[in-house]
Image (cartoon, helix red, strand yellow):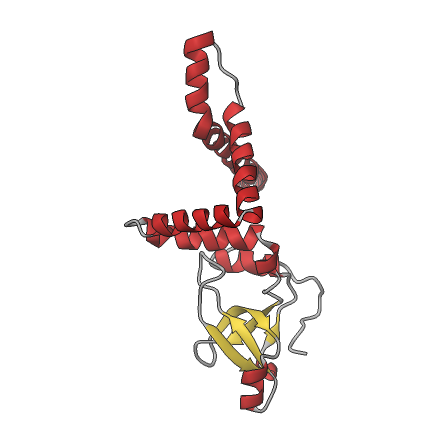
Length: 218
């Protein structure tokens, strides 16, 4: 009996411990990420100005670099959005930067992810999240419908076809584009944002269905 009670208490303690980890780890990681982002943004410009202020006036201003970084972001956005010369200048700088060794393997994917999450016109292109048998029958892949009836493809195939992007982690915009008949496409009952999390996490973040019943192809 005492042995069983000890085991029961041990199981309870383990359950409480792991339940606490489930709550605390996301909070701690999120806080650390936000703190790191603050220090990075604040140090981007703040280190130079605060060094000058420290040497000249003997004090620094916490958050000054973050404020200036925000102003810089707004300035670049305004330059790109409303000035043709500024837009071309930024594009030239990006192309030159992307040609650098190692950078050209990192920058394009990061740029695609940033464009997708912060540019609404790109996000509209992903209409639905689907499951398709790809690259061979019996193997299922997640995909995003980009066009529900591309005319040239549908007319040529003689039936309604879906244009589907198969994402390749970590970039949601890279991957093959395939065309499948409507009947071979199974709709997933999740949002595009949830589908992106599923794809970018390599299948780790699996969202729950919005409804109890499964939704197949229309």
